[in-house]
Image (tube, rainbow, N blue to C red; front, top):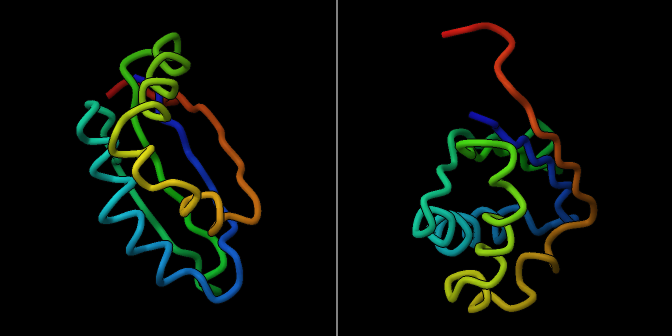
Length: 99
């Protein structure tokens, strides 16, 4: 398994609308493609949204991301997601210890 931690700096004053967009549009579009979202956080200043999604294998990520970007659920959102995001940081991570 590979987890992808995504940290988004959300434009000032847009966190509430981002959370609604994520919950009603972005998250369901991921789930429809079998990309689980395993955790979400908002920092104390309410300026960053941090979330983790999971992939079976690191080699799957480019194909799954392309499938997501071209999915009806995501394309229906238009430019709404990107209009909320000032900065984006993405890191792929693997577990440090065996479960």
